[in-house]
Amino acid sequence: MERQSDGTYIKKGPWTGEEDEVLMNYVKKYGPKGWSSIRSMGLLPRTGKSCRLRWVNKLRPNLKSGCKFSAEEERVVIELQAQYGNKWAKIASHLSGRTDNDVKNFWSARRKRLERILQTPTSKSNKNKGKDPVLHEMPIMEVTPSNCNVPLEQGSSSSHEDQSRKPPSISFSGNSEDFRMVPLPDLINPDLLNLETCLPILDIPQPLQMIPPVEPSMNYPVTLLPQLQLDLAPEPIDINFMDMLKHQQQIVESEESKPKSLTLTRSPPSTVTKGKAQVGDKEDRRILATPDSFFDEFPTDMFDCLEPLPNSSEW
DNA sequence: AAGACCCGCAACCGCAACTTG
DNA sequence: ACAAGTTGCGGTTGCGGGTCT
Image (cartoon, rainbow, N blue to C red; front, side):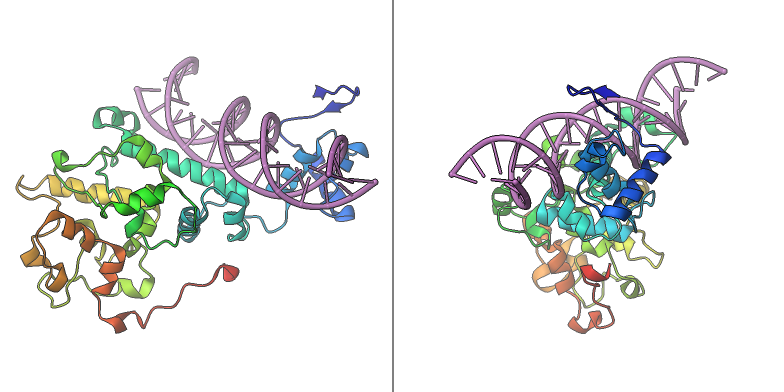
């Protein structure tokens, strides 16, 4: 309780069931408005702000409170965050049953996880060995916005302009000395965290997963990151981000157990592609890894079986 | 068993935008 | 036009539960 200058008290902290009930009754009677009058009417010793927040975040009907974000919701948040920035209310409006607070908390938790994973050196990772022994040191895949197919609103991020001038860059290798470590500030850049949206191959709709693994000798020029080749294996893919990271880590570890000469860089041109993909220099090979170029390499009719994504009103 | 640490979540705070008199 | 009140939003913090040492 906090005493106000007018002698009244304002309660803060967790809400009780009784308070919730009073608030529900108020909304039933007067609608979700006039929040300040709840206190002035003497119904609750809470500020109007507090009442509104409680209603919006916990008492509103059709909320998915306590329910973890699904892979699809995660994907939507990531795409919309890239598009709108930290406009949590706007993003939440695309997700039924989610509040801006939910989205905000989800995003910050996700960012913290990534920062930890991408930043933590092997020696420190022992702390987590009980929780997740698979995650020791992650190779960094740096993906710039220019190779993401996420539509960007004008002015949504000032950093995009600079980054778009750089060539698309994906640095990935099984040899630790080949890892390109990205400074933390870059990692925090949300655009660089959008691995799912930057690598839509990992978000393969179900029918596509039925496609058999691609052989390097096939006629279709295919440009795959090494882990993506493995990802095309018949087993189902969980696009949950943490699972994806674990999956990549397992691949890295299995590759590391092979002779040193076998690195995780993509296969030599002669074994990978033909046509425009048949290039040798580092930079061109990076460009080949963009999502667009990846799909461009498939026969145009192979996506006929895919259902279009539902629009946001259907979510 | 106890303390340290980590993590998710609920709630608060400050500010900006909007509304009303 | 302006001030006061209200609402909405994004950032931050503190608490409680779970896990590890």
